Amino acid sequence: MLRAVRTLAWGLAALAAAVPLLTANTYYLFLAGLIGAGVVVGTGLNILAGNSGQVSLGHAGLYAIGAYTGAILATRLGVGFWVSLPAAAVVSGAVGTLLAMPALRVTGPYLAMVTIAFGIIVEHGLIEWETLTRGFGGIADIPKPHLGSLPLALPQYYYVVGAAVVASLFLARNLARSPWGRALAAVRESEVAAESLGLSPTLARTTAFALSAAFAGAGGCLYAYLTQFVSPDSFTFETSILFLLIVLFGGLGRVAGPLIGSIVLMVLPEALQQFSNYRLILYGLLLLGSIYFLPRGMAGAIEAWLARFRHLVPGGEGEPAAPTPAVHPEALEARGVRMAFGGLQALADVNLAVAPRSIHSLIGPNGAGKTTLLNILSGYYRPTGGVVRFAGRELQGRPPHRIARGGISRTFQTTQLFEEMTVLENVQVGLAGPRLGGLGSALLGRRTVAAREVALRAEALGLLAFVGYTGSPHERARNLAFGHRRLVEIARALAARPALLLLDEPSAGLAAAEIEGLGQLIRRVREAGIAVLLVGHHMELVMEVSDRVTVLDYGRVIAEGPPGQVQTDPAVLEAYLGIA
Image (cartoon, rainbow, N blue to C red; front, side, top):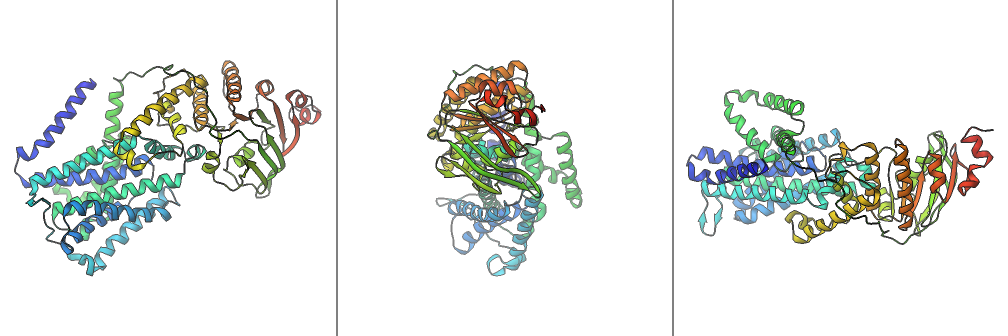
């Protein structure tokens, strides 16, 4: 079946290449050119919306900047197409980067509102800045592109647009298969978990916005040379809606999505010209229909259908490989840590010291402040007072991704896996961490990137074997049983090569046999040279694996020492076990 699909794909590609040989109708070739420009813009928007999860409703503005850059360079400065195209991409990319810096301080609908405002500003700027853009009249007489001294008529320009489409899809595919692509998807899936692995959400989103803007600029330049005329009427809010619909209908996050979406949505208006006055209504109905009936778009539906014919490789592909700390093991020391939420004092003068290569447990009744303390140690909360030191540096006030890069990794009370990624990809995100390599190398799919991917895959399989995961490494995280989810999250945290691992209630929800295996795993982590700070309610596990135990009650330390000593402490028996 898969071979038949590949054969069909190659056949469609050959048919697309033969279009100028099969027809001389300029209308069809012009429509094909519009589809190609839409694919290029849609591919960039897919990187932003599909890969990093940020919605833009102002991409028509970036598209317009690319189109006008190409038109002005051609008509005012006599610059040829082959220089105008990369120049348009660079200019739009730069504008996108500048826009991203303030825009990405907000997310969700607020980001959409910012990009809508940007699109409106660009549209009206094109009208008002007549000395540069010629206002409503637009820029006409854009010359045809040349190949040497040979002018490229529409049939030849068709192949130029086709090459741009292939290039954009090639770059997007390479990006998706690289550490950069996984980093963008990780930020989209769970910003909290991504930061715990050393990833900077701001850097990831700004990069995605800049790339998306560059693709939009290139698509705008292709459009300008196709129509040989640009005016503000071509870059309205409706155009932004069309680009977003191309991505959503085609398949958010799927490389082939913009291709499918652009073909359908560029042809559909032409087929329904008699309903042109109702175009926005039709777009709205199509958008609602695709959300309800094709939540993953056409490409996603096809992918799900093909998945039935794929064989998931079972687990056990790798030999167990113990993690090694990336930094020299150091002690963690917290002194006088306080945390208040308004009038609620969650932590009061907490002191904690975790020795290198030790297992230190933190226990206490519900609401004692255990997770709050872990959130302070890992940077998600800034303490009201006190000092936290690790590896000679003070941690309070540092962002989570900076603390993670310094050698502290963690899991969460409620597992924070990247649901749409496979088990293997989850661990690979942790292995790469902030060491993503060159963005250009990732886009071009250079051999160094491919070689590193092979190494990351082997190391990820070794870590999965180390934690005792026996399922398929190619299973999507959203499909995992609860026990497997815990193991994968621990493997991903270990992949960051920490010197200190924070485990927040890892035994919660596990069966007795799974808890026994968890205890053995925690010991293996210590033997690998990694200190563990364990938050837990399962007393048998805590007392069996711990070197020292700290007990919290109402945000204060009431006992600390070896497990046997803590177990018999009267204050612990009263506060934790309810024995007076």
